[in-house]
Length: 96
Image (cartoon, rainbow, N blue to C red; front, side):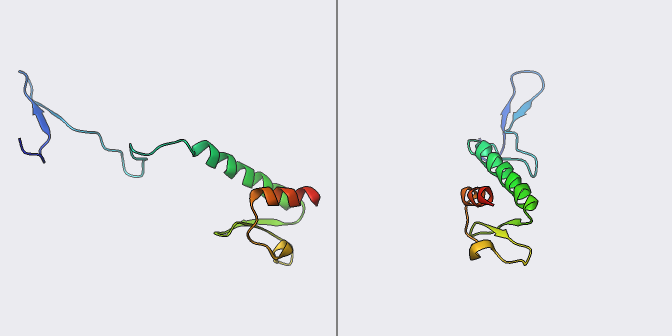
């Protein structure tokens, strides 16, 4: 049997081919796993909650490759830090 051709079964009646079903374009592959999805969603929701809290205090929360930064009305990072974690941001907003 040719390894490139799909397997053909002819057990009497209509011949049928068996192939694996591929995922539609843009969909997750069959090999993708979901164990970190809940943690990622929780972090995203926590970031949005902190963004609202920062806005209530006249600040903006920004995210970069280094981490998070709280930006004041003069467009300067609070404490000249742009590498804060969400825990740091939450702690700082709790003090303010």
